[in-house]
Image (cartoon, rainbow, N blue to C red; front, side):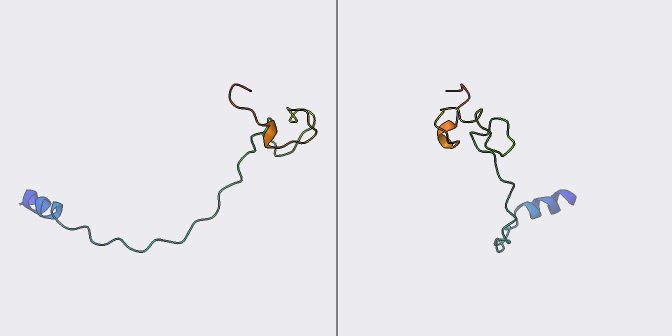
Length: 66
């Protein structure tokens, strides 16, 4: 009897999806690629890796530090 009930439920339609819920809150701000010590502050001269006097995306380094 239980097996027949389970079989009957397996064949049931899931129905229509409901409406989407509200968007959640924004996540935490990520780290900048130039922020070598991950403190959120532009630290001269260490993070000015290209030596142009500006800490920006041009100071970013990949995994191989190139």
